[in-house]
Image: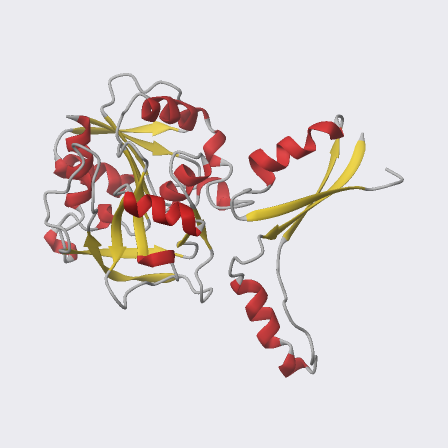
Length: 77
Length: 223
């Protein structure tokens, strides 16, 4: 089994209110100078056939209309 | 007229939808998500709720249920399908409707009565509302992920094709939806989705019967 990590994030240009809310909270905690916060999702999985992961992302893990995804293989699995 | 209301684990408005279908006229029955058979059903309602816990994205998992496969075939044959709230999200995820529903702009769950403007410029044949364009319906909305979004060129196309069936009245957009869009149809006009809940506005006891317009519109497509 091949271990992989899928990162899913809102597409550039789509308002991400979660990211905005995090960004607005930061100065009150003393974190200045942080911008363009975007909140996405991460899915870890093990696959017999990593060649099919892109199809899996297109069909289920991400909605390609509104989200971008990246597949990373995790070494040492 | 025989209505089928799909029931997923996590649906919560299917009983009100059944009631609304019956008031609109005809018989209505629940269709469990594992059922594949829509034999004898003239119109389908995909109700609100939190199907499969809304895990991953609202509607993302529900679209792969056996019942939704049957609904996709039913819609492809021209059968009328109504998606309400979570049902709208499911139909968008299933590519039966254009666009997507995102987290409300202000991150708050909205629960209140909204005014909807009825109005398509060029509705597909046979799908016109009985209510004149520009008139408003008073219907409750309750959702956390109802911000309608589609790429600009898709929005232009939807408007040109008469697929934007409901808009929030000026100043009433509760979630940041693009162009105040509350409900859309597919290109053929037989699949309709909206975020507000017409099934909760069918009895004067709860303040409004305006929701019947939505069910009657669908019944007309079935006829």
